[in-house]
Image (tube, rainbow, N blue to C red; front, side, top):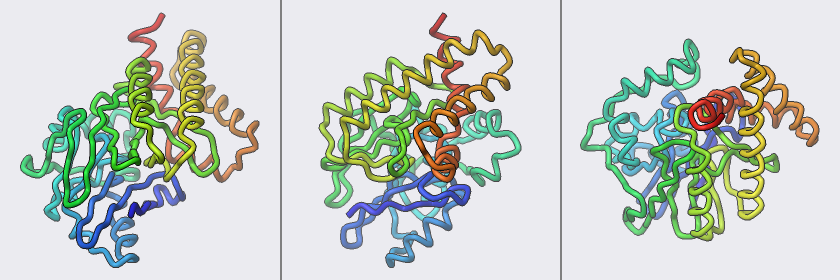
Length: 294
């Protein structure tokens, strides 16, 4: 059984989720959300008679705070945290992670994420590409999938893949949109990661933003189109709008107008903007093109 847990991020439904796998008294959690929403997860688990302290294994796709910011709380309960080797040091000693996030979010750190605390190194387990993790009768395969982040893992369970951010964001029947925050966006590696996921022939994708999706071919096609559209927009417009604030403003308008033209409701647009703020993608894609483009 895979249960989708909606953490109600910023009081928005279907913006950020995590996933519980349950077999008898064996529990695995994929993603944690920010620590600020630990109580939301606890409440959701209580509703199905699961004690949050019984979760002793947590898989995170990467260390961005909307995916693993609450990992330290589960580690304090005795849980082991599984993460890519490049991400592990930043869970053990999150000073650099906090500093980097603070540069982006400033005074909104506490409002968005809550506390971030270090995790005992004995509780952090590094997992490399294609490594198989066995937890009770559960078996997970780690798929190294950079592009969104250089330490990103998608977790394969049977014919399901927990995609983190590498498969973008899709809420309900809305469009598939990429998440392109700084500092690690790499479009070439992202395409290689999508090809890797396609080769696994999954039946279902489980997106942190948000939920279960089955139309795999269309999903990846739409993601590629959107990623190309956004990346080319930023590549060209960064030359016209030299001021970052203006560039962000214009990109927000571009994305919003495009969503409106697709008859997407204001409510759903708000959910997308909570799950995947477009300004973050401006920063990430601009950094990419400044480094690799012309």
